[in-house]
Image 1: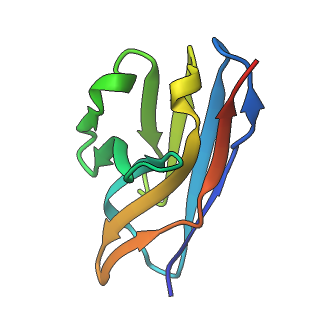
Image 2 (image 1 turned 90 degrees about the vertical axis):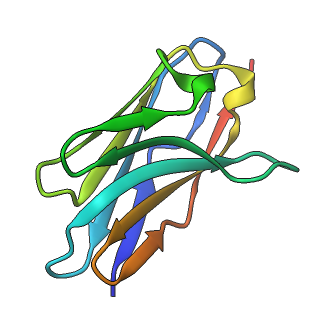
Amino acid sequence: QVQLVESGGSLVQPGGSLRLSCAASGRSFSAHAMGWYRQAPGKQRELVARIIVNGDTNYADSVKGRFTISRDKTMRKVFLQMNSLETEDTAVYYCHAVGHGGEYWGQGTQVTVSS
């Protein structure tokens, strides 16, 4: 059984920074791809950033230049450094992983950007 556990969500002022972390549990699990999605109230879940095993990344246009995704060498942990946060970044952020056996989601962590 693979579980993804996120941490790092918080309340932050506009212009501030946060770092989200996600760790995958489950013996022998190693992802082919890991990423972060977010869902704001009344909106669909959307991809924020994704990284694959060779290190290639892609980002939503709205976060390019502000957010950086990274991972550990084992592809069991993924991080999202979020800088210059805007009120529009307020959402529940979900960790996502694709590996042997399918795809997995974390339970979500709340990020609120407000003054």
